[in-house]
Length: 456
Image: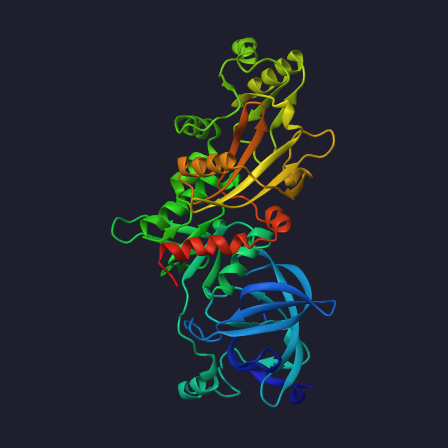
């Protein structure tokens, strides 16, 4: 039986003709179950009713200039645990592995292997019944010269033509994050998704650094787009500050994001800049509940957790008794809350203005579900295109400027007293507003970065 099997060393060169990869060095590892191929800018798409995935690969280690754009039929998505114990969901493709005279179909997962020593890992599932491994040997099937590699990849060589931009976020599968990556690539930039939890930093007065999973140093970035979820604000802003210390342009500074996440402080800032808000009260002691309710005009009123997001932790108290119960319940949990007047005439609607670099680039009206007063899209609210007034635009721009945010989702409510500001979001979602307006909001964010660098 062994005479029918290919004998491989611990490292070998192979190719993937169906992917257009003429040669790539692989680590042959029978200890690993699954094969993995280095891939960046991974994006699923549909072709003729079938699921496909496109991705880019730098086939030669430590060479980011050589890039091959690949497409493959998508076989599966699965959770893979790496040798270091890290678990991630990966796309799985099927293609032909070519060792010269020996070819067979294999399945591989796609993952960023920048921090690994090899662009390709050949696991035992792909070798079973076909391969014997001699771990003391290398390149038993031959090794190309540098001249041969240059010849094979001559047409793949390309100079860096765009900016190097990092998207600092938690979930690469979110619509907003995928759209930003896509928009940057379409405009010719080198886009990288940077998972907040996989970044760590070196604090140094002369040479501050940010490292990525496996020890890779994140260097040479021109810009970073922070998209920090509320639950990880502290660490995400610490990383953003570190990028700022490294002289990387951040499309929303750490200080702007931090103050926008503090609802009480942000409302105080907005008022100091002449932006009107619904009458709001804040107290620490439950003994002040009665006067707190009177302060905002009595019931019905809104009770908001300071730490709440996307409509969570927001309660409508329709009677004074209900208001007292809700306020005292939150106080008993040592939760910080705001009490705010209820704008009945808004009728469950608000306006989301998307502000980028001092301009309102799009606006939608969000309408709550019947029986609901919160218009958040995440809670089932619907979005429709709306023409905002010059006063509403002025308020949105003024609010973003007061918070020092280059990108902001500004929520405004129409009242009998005129437009009132509800909230300013430093990481506004794109799906609802792009879907309703058909505008390329992600592209506008990339243009704001280009403007900073006077990029043409």
